[in-house]
Length: 186
Image (cartoon, rainbow, N blue to C red):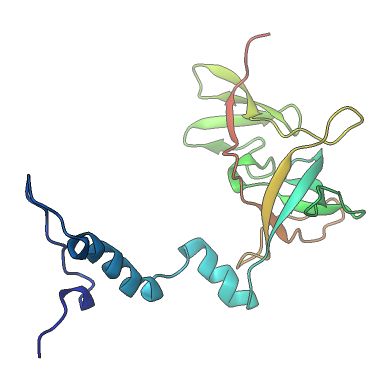
């Protein structure tokens, strides 16, 4: 009994030769290989822990209303972009939080925060004023407020508590790639 080469997930596909006429059967080899191995592919590792711990992972779309030191105050958004009525706190990604870094030194750089959105970084020789880029735009009279995506109840929690010492259970996935950067000269 011959073994199909595509039953072995470690088997390599045959390369085509220059000038070779390629039949549909040869073009379909990679397609068959992928289709046979799809059932064995799992979700990204970041998702597995959340899905296993709570039985189900929830990602939700939010509108930013206020920016705090370690979390954002948000409202849910529905499919029609209507904001919900309740404030929901969403933890910022770890490196964007204030509490772990304010007055602390990390990798030889000391951080001092002047507000929840601005800080000074000092390596002992030079200082740099920093802001989060792109900034979070809060909902206001003339602004619609940034949209973020957050996951609920990641395994181990978020490690963030609000001003009333309640655990914040949502975590901003930072799909916009926000990071601290040098503040532009004014």
